[in-house]
Length: 437
Ligand code: XLS
Ligand code: NI
Ligand code: NI
Image (cartoon, rainbow, N blue to C red; front, top):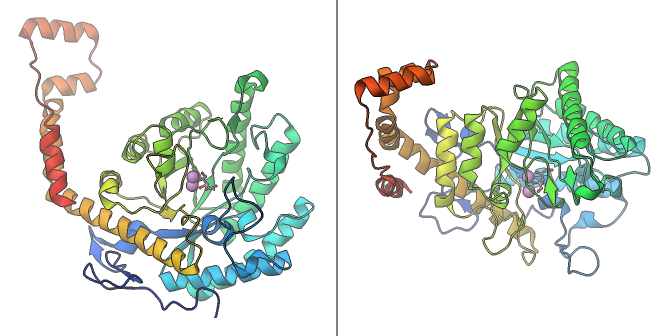
């Protein structure tokens, strides 16, 4: 198989001392830590959209694509097949076990939904064969319900029910394909499920419609016997001014209200967490605590820029706290770590795509190894247990069993309780973490 990615030999692990820019220094796929291989813990994926579809445009650029890729011109369906071949060549050379796609990334939109679906079918039939030949697996599929003008005012939350119906038809098709390709998850990211101004928005109706839409997705999943996980990807804004899936806690409240908290989990993206004013580890820990941690979109933002810059992760120290939360939660289950990340605009060569993914995966692997060592040392867990030790005593157990205000007041008076403040030892704990990163 030859493509624009074929100049590069398969990427191998060479260890931390290697100076080869085209080798892994931390991602030793078969290395066993905490009972599983690194590949099994991380389950890394290449995303189709940023890597093969984005042409380097930004809002200030003139014309079409800055990047030169052979599939950016020619008859659209033939170009889509060429792009697919190149994508699988790239996955294999990187040794990436998973990929992710939107329907409109893999195949061009047609004049009607029937035609669009036929395009998707033609390309995904070929993808099914490619997956078989290469062993590359599908982490998740998703429908693009945000690029076409019809979705300008939302998909499931559109004021026009015809748009809702169209979105439903599109999701049905991709969900069925995701099952057929043995996808591990199905993602819904509601980029336009929100509002620009409340002056033209019936908030309550939109939320009810969104709840019903999600319930219909879950019903169809069970109807067709799809075994993967349905995931919502929270983001606070961009492109809409306010997005309904703001963050982990907001989505949990939404799921609870519509009775879906045991059916749907979260795909958490680093840059979305920071846009919501949270740390990434906050989002991961909150989802884990609420029992809805599903999968990860790995990337990072830029502190000077307040939007979703989708850069590749490159600072392992920043990711150790989130990795620790994932380890404490006992892993991601059907989830994985998808590089929802793109190279910078001036990185125009196919080579840049390799180096971006190598650096990103090394960063995840190194963060995971640090967090695993930290976890195995037991130092933080012992400090946590000591801090909360009172809860395994008599009083703590009585409270957790549902003690009333009266019972507690009686006890405080009877025993003359006057609790004294105790140090949280934050700096000691931070110093412990620094010994492991
Ligand atoms: C956009 C989202 C998007 C989803 C998939 O900000 O991250 O790329 O991951 O629709
Ligand atoms: Ni994003
Ligand atoms: Ni994402």
